[in-house]
Image (tube, rainbow, N blue to C red; front, side, top):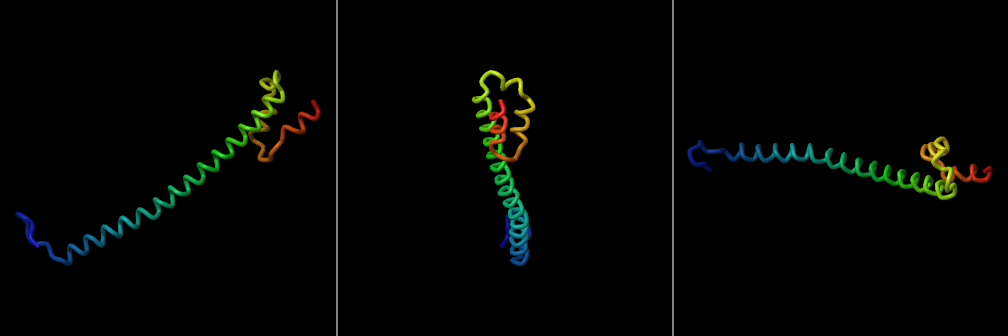
Length: 94
């Protein structure tokens, strides 16, 4: 095999170059694919948590129509607390 204006390329060099490029692509693409899948899973999990906590705050705001803006501690507790229905114990008392 001879390229125009260049010295001939041996078959061994061509196969070696193809093998090296396949090895490099494989070595980069597998970890990159894993990183992308993990990132997507973490992002989806955070989105679900954010939606759940926003729904809890919205329920709390709907129950306490006028005073929910002034209860920053209760709202912060709703956002940070991992359990569900943390606002129900506050509504029973007042």
